[in-house]
Length: 58
Image (cartoon, rainbow, N blue to C red; front, side, top):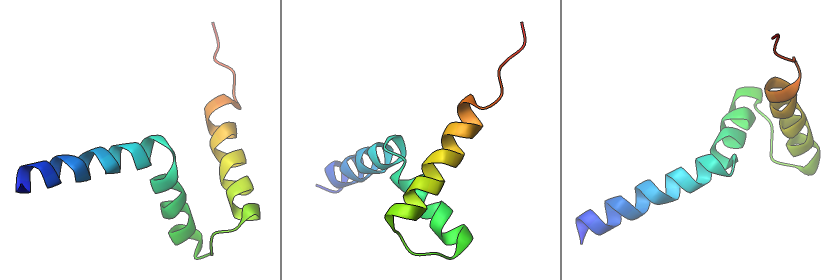
């Protein structure tokens, strides 16, 4: 049973990371703010700018 639980916890952590929930929690801790629609918007905009903001050359 312990192995199944560990596998489930690992899968859950992976899904949270893929859905940006873990990153959002780290963002909130770093900024010492509470979750809100406005904070989610700032977080999402910052992530999008980091990914797509600067075009690659050649």
